[in-house]
Amino acid sequence: MFGLEWLRARTKGWGLLEHARGGLPLLGEGYTTDDNARALLPPGAQDRALAQTYLAFLAYMQREDGRFRNDLSLEGRHEDEGEVEDPTGRAVWALAAASLRLGFPDLQEAARSVLEQAYRAVEGLSAPRAQAYALLGLLALRDAPARELAHLLGQRLLRAFREAEAAWPFPGPLIYANHRPVEALWAYAQAFGDGEAQTLALRAKGFLDQLYFQEDPEGPFFDP
Image (cartoon, rainbow, N blue to C red; front, side, top):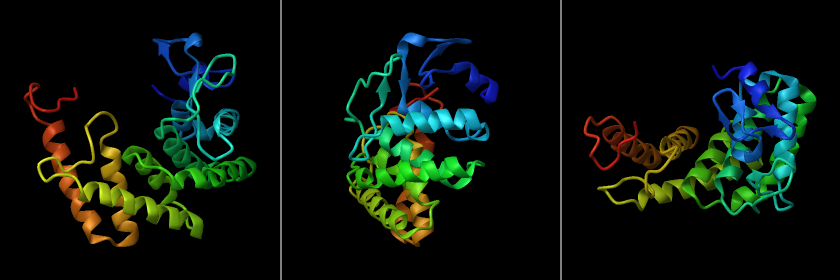
């Protein structure tokens, strides 16, 4: 369902449109970095024209300090200044993957350039989900700056899980993409041989499993 034709039908002008109703793209609702970062991953990465569009979108949304704005109007007007961190984390993840796996060398190089400009912003990430997105991208890279940033983010994420209460072993409320911080902490544990991170990731996974897969819809968390 969500293949190349699906993407092509919803990619207009600046990039992948944020919303559609059925097969009808909703032009008035504009674009987001969140969605165009996702679209830069497969299958979008397999089509040169689409990959180029999504990559150009991310470059346009990047501020001088490396952070990414999220919302863009249909006319190309920025509608925020990057106050929310998650789009920066998502963009870093997508750009890291693109710099490694795009089948177009010039676009790989362009992705790497935009990614390296984001490194300064990555240092300032404080939200667990934003840290998790960026960490998952950086762990795939092998250069020293990426490894150093990955270790920094991994340590911050580890501290957030360490400080969580035993009765709620997750850093903050459960809202969306709750598995990503756990996945990223586990990946960090494997990459750096951190036993504490592995233990806390497994504890949090067990906690989420109990809540996600419970049969009682009146329980503390129910995500149908």
